[in-house]
Length: 285
Image (cartoon, rainbow, N blue to C red; front, top):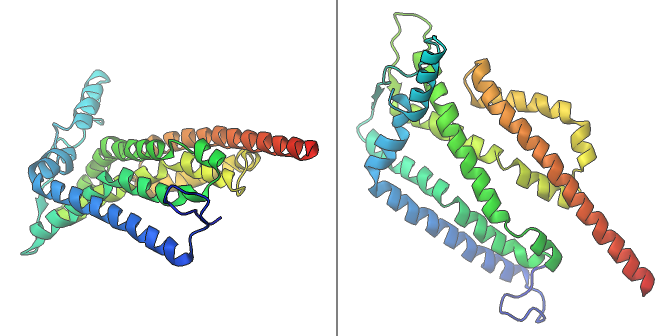
C-alpha cells in the first residue's frame, strides 16, 4: 500500500515513487546525522568509552568477575574466579590506536543511535499502515529499543567476561604466549554485544511475521524442537565452547521464543476478531 502525502491532508492522493525515494532519503539523512553526532560524543569521551566500558571486563574489578569470584568463594571453588589476571593488549600499527578510537566511536554511535534509526524507519512505513494496524503496533520502537539494549547489556555483562577469560587464557602450548591485538579484543566484544542485541529482537520479528501471515502460533509450536536446536547452535557460535556460557544464552533465547509464541497467538486472535467484524459488517450491508 502506497503511503499518503505527509502534509496533513491525507486525501490528496498517493505519493509517487520519486516522492517515496525523497522521503526515504530524508529519513536516512536524519539517521546518519544521529549516528555521526553520537559518534563525535563517544570520540570525545574516550576515557569513559575505553577505560570504563571496553577495557573493564578484562580486569578482576569488573562487576561480573567480582560477583562470580565471590560466588566461587561461597561454593569453595576457584573455577568461578575469572579474569584474575588483567589481559594485556598490544598495538602493532603506527596509527592503530587512532583508527581503533575512530572505529569504536562509530560502533558506539551506531548502538546509541539505534532508537533514532528505528524511529525514522517507523515514521517512513507508518503512513502505509491502516489506522488499526498503526495503533496496534504503537510502542514498537520503544519495545524494540528496550529489547536491543537488554540484549547488548546481557552480552556485555554475562558473555563478554566469560569469552575474555576462555579465549584469553586458552593455550595450545606453554611455549606460545598470548599477545592479544587490541582490535581483535574489541572486535570480539562488539560482535558478541551486537549479535545478542539483535537476537533479542526475536519477539518483534515474530510480531511482524505473524502480522503478514508468514508464521502462526501452530507453526512455532510444531517446530519448537527444531528451534531449540537452532538456538543451541547459535549459542555455540556466539559464546566460548563451554556448557555454562551456552546455557547462559540458550535459556534466555528459549524464553524469548516462548514469549514469541504468546505474541503470535495474540496477533492471530486480533486478526480473527477483525475478520469476524468485517464479515458481520459485510453481511449487514
